[in-house]
Image (tube, helix red, strand yellow):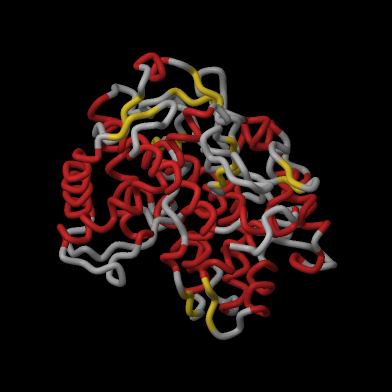
Length: 413
């Protein structure tokens, strides 16, 4: 932790770390274990059942226990179709660095557009006729949009995400890409379009990262590699993501005039510094970091200390703990209340999710005979808690939605 969290710059820097996410989330878990949280009770005796459930799902999905990281690349492979592989074949004449840049151009907008779609939205994939929903549908739709030039200003190079192309994204662009209609509504269309435009503006404002001429997302790969030519720490990728893309998020909480992003207030987190009451999550940024790690590794770059990143506080992982009875709302009416993302109950739920994922990983590994080195948290998530959260939701609710009703603005969940 920085020496002085009463200094704005140091407070902001600390809040934009995985260490801060983990520390504040475990502080909430400690309050939960003491039985003093405002909105939820914990039944940690149910953790054994949760570990059994997750381990069983992992065995079903990955019988050989060869589990990839939890990342966007799994969604591009929805229903067993290797869509990225087909693109890779088409651009195989490019050198390895340019392919990495292209993958950044695809991955960053796709991840940033991966907020909750709602329970009724579907995407009909051209060519296959498959109907895909939720994260897989969003991923495949954004991949097709990328191939068709949705993020590019260059008609001769459609597979590009450059400043001018992103700045031109409108709600109509989003509606077309995701086949939105009155019968096929998608949550947060204006927020998604605004996020893409902000992304384009950031590319122009940071020539040190994205290039002075023809700024593009892919130049972030070069920026990180210049700083870490031998081995890239996972935390450095997260720090670069938060530094580069921090300004795109809607203005919520600030310290010293700097937007904090996915950071929220909880009245029971009290410290004697500028971070009092604040809990960071950086869910989409960490999800993006997990996804970018694969690009580095496939380009032959070593990525270290992946375990420093945290679990993702979203409604599949969080829903798993509520649906299995580990987390219980104090007020049953909470389940039927439409909650904005800044509601303290949502913040509490997300913090407990991060900490409980840390706690759950160990017994899951024990049941599978794997060590932390063999099965890092990123693999437990993929194998794993995210899939288990979706499975239990589909077993308990006809629409497979989360156990709490969240009012999403398209930029958090």
